[in-house]
Figure 1 (cartoon, rainbow over the protein chains, first blue to last red):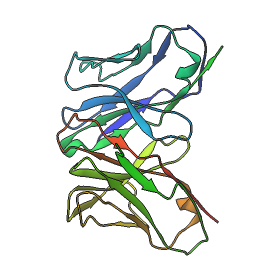
Figure 2 (figure 1 turned 60 degrees about the horizontal axis):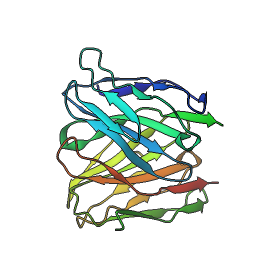
Figure 3 (figure 1 turned 135 degrees about the horizontal axis):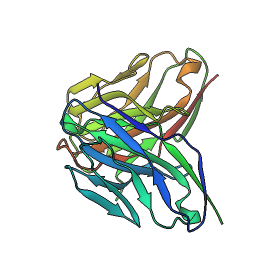
Figure 4 (figure 1 turned 180 degrees about the vertical axis):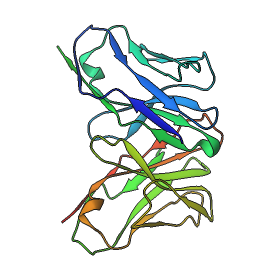
Length: 111
Length: 113
């Protein structure tokens, strides 16, 4: 089947620390991969995406590389800010753009 | 600049009551979907539609009905509310083409007592 597994949270970091949130997937086809972010009380917003192997998505200092050989799409940021505190969801999309989401990882950044 | 609009934002129901969660999008997207978000479980797909008149079940469809009479609207109906349906519900829309962004509404927080 199709599924996404991401590291459990919460992840607590100090401001300016390095962030990695792991994400691996299983898929019956050749998916597109996404990271979405959810701020408190809001819906999900697209953070970045990659549609083929070795593509790197990037936005607002966040990066993730589509690794087909390890079926992974890990999210990284070199220096987190308090404003990055949110819940991060890894997702894949297949035929008809049907999405499958991971369970989400809550990030807390302390000043 | 509305995007995906969900109503209501909050709702409290008694067990056995029925209600409809509304979802509308103004981007002419073919694909629309409903998810529920529960702690530790991410977003689970309830129902989806690839166009007007076409709907299908997702991962957790029991207790919910949908219809798609227009491209813009995709209401979710709870037939007889149960406490297990207490959750946050999100509607999303996108193009059918794989790899395009899904846009989400602000969510409906539903409590069934």
